[in-house]
Length: 286
Length: 159
Image 1 (tube, rainbow over the protein chains, first blue to last red):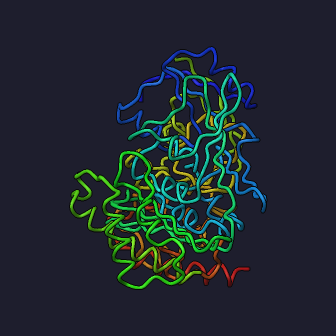
Image 2 (image 1 turned 135 degrees about the vertical axis):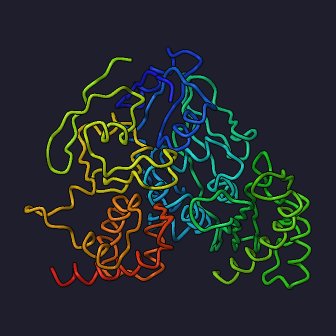
């Protein structure tokens, strides 16, 4: 690993100040489980790393029944997985958290970091999309809130400008009783990147039953299967032929690549299969 | 890059590590002779460099040494009793033949200590989940799972 300078601010304000006067080749670190690996593999060579890990206020996970779940930038994947309200109201997120890397890495890797890394197979992306997640971005001119669907702009690309820090991700509370799940297809259970990930959430809203679907590892940017969601809207117990149609529609929403883990064709086909499975599992959990 | 001192409590004893910002906890520990912490993949995959940092399992190749400032680090050496006797988990590994080349063993043992603190009587599923971050290329894991059950029984007897 090439040498770098390290700053360890103890307050968020101090972190923003350091970033405002730092050069263009600066990296912000939370857990660092992607950053250190990317540096070791010579994908990035930051001259300065701003390590957020001493900033207490970023460690918080808070839940407000009328607002939602707010996950601070330093909250680890395990802390989210173990959070009682996350388990109760955001099961697709907790499923995905438990499928992420392995037990030990989850003590270091953060949920917000996974979103910032923006690797298409990132397990936190699809669940944050079905829960309409919003990133709180703070910078020199104040704070802005950006939906995760817009926050990630491509593989390993996000909208963060120089001087900005992703402070927390907020998942608004759903408007009614809900159930959901995240299914991940990989070659092994631990420490594997997804070939396909599917997040599904079903909510009984005042306007009827609503379905949401999002996928991991099959699109360069986050995606919601709007066509499939619209097909199923209002249907309380979908029959097999409707599930089949939803799966077809879902397959039309993705644009995977062929790589070492799976071919494009296999991934598309598995999006269909996993969509049906995820819908069935979410209905069972309802 | 100039070195800076990092104060940690290593296996109960205060110690100062001299490190660069880029020095990982793994390399800093090996530098001061803690060779139970193995350098395997150095990418957070294999788990041979696992330590307990303030009571939580961490892969020390994924921790910058400076992040350990003021914190408690426990390695496999730190599991020994006051007279140097082996920890029940270490004994169980030996008795069940859960060691072949031994490279994964120090990290694996720490992961088992952590697992048994959370699940004193774990199921096979909980064992697999708890050890998911530690790879063993020799044993096929069967003897390791036996050793975990044995260690759980030994710890229960002791308490």
